[in-house]
Length: 221
Image (cartoon, rainbow, N blue to C red):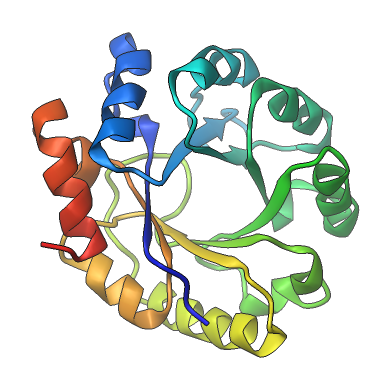
C-alpha cells in the first residue's frame, strides 16, 4: 500500500556556504526527510561530503536524515555515517560484493536500510532482499550529478517495485531520485513512488520559496 507522499530535498542543490541554515529552512518549510548525497569520485564522477559534514548538520534538524551512499567499497564507511546521525542508509547493489551482508550491517547499527537501483539495474536486484529492506531507491538519472534530465523508463521500474512491495505486505519506502520537478513528480507518484528526492525543484527561488515548492511537489497546490 502506497504511503503518504514525503518530500526529501537533496542538499546537493543547497547553498553549501550556508548548509546549516538551508537545512533549518527546509525543515520549517515542511520537508519530511533531508536527503544527503555522498559521492566519492570513484563509484560516481563527483565528490561531495563525508560523515564529518553529516555530523555537523545533525543538530540543525530533527527530520529524518536520508543518507544515500554513492561510494565503493561502501561497507567500511557505514558505521561512520550511522554515528554521524543518519536515520536511513542507502547503498547501491554494485557498491558491495555481498549486499545482503551490507544490509545486515546497517540494521545491526540500529538504522533503516535501503537499496538503490541505477537506471540499468533490474528490479530483480531486490530479489531475496525485500524482507530486510526499509527503502528501495530508484535512480531516474545516472548518479553523480544534480540537475540531470529524467529517464522515462524508470517509471515502469517504479510501478513494478510498487507491485512487489505491496505483495510483500511490508511497509517499505519507495523513493525516486533524479530529475524530479513539478512536471515529473505527479507522474512518479502515479507510478507508485511515495518519497520524492528533489534538489533543484526544492531550492529554486531561495528560502522564501521552499514551502511553496515542497507543497507543489507533494501535490497539495
